[in-house]
Image (cartoon, rainbow, N blue to C red):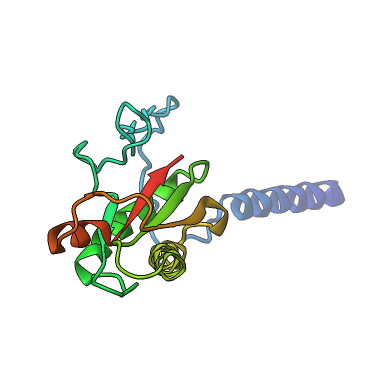
Amino acid sequence: MQIRSRLSSLAISILAALFIAGCSSTATEPVDQQEPVDQTPEVVAPEVEEIISDFAEDNSTPVDGSGQPISRTFFFEYDKAILNPSDLATLEVHAQILVRNSNRSVVVQGHCDERGTREYNLALGEGRATAISNFLRSAGVGSRQIEVVSYGEERPQNPAHDSTAWAENRRAVLQYR
């Protein structure tokens, strides 16, 4: 009977030790109570950005953010194919439009006044158109989107034969397609 009582005492001691060990905690700081989690996530509608067209209703005239037409004609000094610094901001806008609309292309038409030989004016008109093309390409427009054409003196803006007409005819024009 003593053995039985010892076994009973041992069993009770082991059970008590297991019970106490199972209840012990390793946390040294009290645990904050968490707020209950709402099971329904909040649905946020994505912001819809207003799509502004880069072209007027005719689908060929480029427009700025307020819908105003952007100049497509750029003038040059006599016997020069150098871009005017005042035109660079407008050309940058054209470049951005072409980058956003990679399915569109532009023909850069170079023109001259009537002075000089036909061959010289064709080469100068090409140089003017190429100056615009080089700027557009350097601003990220794909070369496949740009075509260069020179009309030399053959398509004057102003048919008069004076300095005002000559200044109007020394130009490059962007024609969107």
